[in-house]
Amino acid sequence: MTARISKQSAWTARRLSAFAVLMLLVGCGGGDGAAGDGSGTEATTRALLTQPAGEGPATSFEGVPEIANQATTAYLPDLGYDRGDVQAPLKVIEFSDFGCGFCRRFHEESFPTLMTEFIETGMIEWKFLPFITGSFGNSLPVTEAAECALEQSTELYEALGGMLWVRQGDWKATGDAAALVRSWAGEAGVDLARFDSCLSEDRRLNRVAGATAIAQQLGVRATPTFWIVGYGPLQGALPVDVFQGIFTTLHAEVLAAADSAAAAPRPGA
Image (cartoon, rainbow, N blue to C red):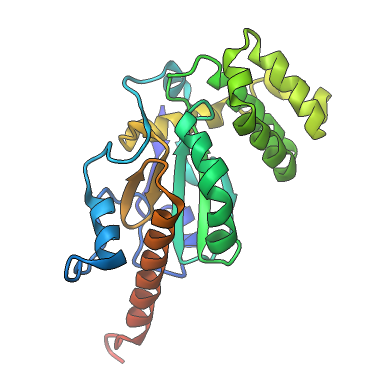
């Protein structure tokens, strides 16, 4: 398997230009800067970003799903579903499994607010990276079906993806998830002939495999996990006000660092 996760990938050059000091997937260390006097939002943000994994409400898993070994390439910029302005100064990668109950909770309770306040306002570019943890038997056909909807349009992907969260209990309990989700795809307006050929030819399977391989390489061991580019992972379906405090603090820090870099004298000037 060829897996390319570069510190200075094409995605970094293309999408992180608004804040050049951030590098894509450089590790789990926090950004520079003092934590202050130990009180307030900044201290809370630092504590959450440096705490041991497992502190947030999340679904843990072990082992390597077989689908990860089927990836022929695993190039992060080409995978997942991106929301928001490519010039946004803060970048977040969400690792979720459609079968994860805590992921569903996050998307139902917190994500709509974050979408309105941070993504639609140009503060954050958000990459949703669904992958297979191996904990949910029907997750693979469901995730591949969502990818085949995305092949047709982002609107159809949003529609089907929303159904997968809301009706999670139904597809997890059925003995034929593929047939059930196909009916939902038709309900969402998906071209079923194209959808069927996408599935039968496995045209999007490598995207699912690649996302799963990347999650494994980065050591993601629970869902949801939010990788804040330049800072590291934040784990769990935390309350929305906690996300608001973290993102507000880091967004301000990113802008301050960019302003400082722009104002610094250039060598030889």
